[in-house]
Figure 1: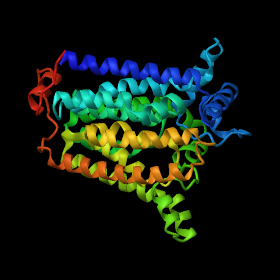
Figure 2 (figure 1 turned 90 degrees about the vertical axis):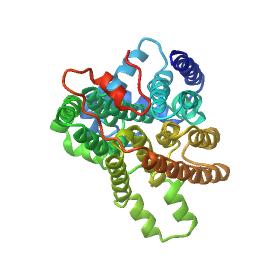
Figure 3 (figure 1 turned 135 degrees about the vertical axis):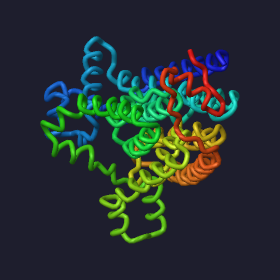
Figure 4 (figure 1 turned 120 degrees about the vertical axis):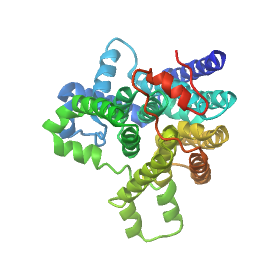
Length: 402
């Protein structure tokens, strides 16, 4: 076990070094400049008042409150002489390091040790994640990592308080994991009152600390900028891309890009809750599938969004993750080499279309594996026993108590 974990850690270190070398030597897409502009604005207005400020030359500031504090800290570090372009790619790159280890821990409890090593190394070496974290540097990878950590802590580690904190952190750096929060709460409820109370306490405490000041100060601007943000209007990916190719009415495309996108968000929430109800012990896989479904149904387009499914499909299985990472990794690399990360060439568009089909296949595989898993309600450790030790006896493959 220790040797297998060490292999994944070495791969994760190599992956982190690769990402940071790219971050230090490549200028990155326009988002690097945009984030630098956001950071300067936050220095001027603060991470709370930033939401109500007009930002000439910059897009809408649509990031949750914790991202503002992160940008404030990164700007302080840049004053020490570290290039901001390198710093802004660091959180996602570091998140990938931990994500590789978390995926290893999740998979080894549900499959063979060899599969766990392959999946962990796959995350570390994923072309999609190297491109989106090391070159692009948005916060998507951080949010996905915290979401997987929350599920792992809740059902594998029996640490509901820490799981609640991780769940709150996931939506505090990027709001997209909100689709998995109901499934997390459902499993916490089924784990018993003590687990639910601890999970809720951890979640509520972090939300109050990070979101509270903004909600009390500029609630309307937070709602408009973050909670109601529907993504860019580019027709590059998924449903919108196919609707455009099929010549569907402009009114339909406008609707699904606007208010209609909430239907797809609710579908993802419903799917996650249903799967979590059926197989609560498979919660990490449920989180992975739900985030992948969100990408499949997304009506917004951006290369960094490909992050949403990259690690998750390795949770589903090595071949699902490898197929997605290789094909969409090529899509991302070619996309970033184009004249703009939001203007894709015909080659990139066709690769993305094929990648969408591969993603759909990975999702079908994930749902089948969740349903095929042996039904196993969340365990309630008997009083007086170590929760981690109790969970080992109740897991199919066991776990190491260190």
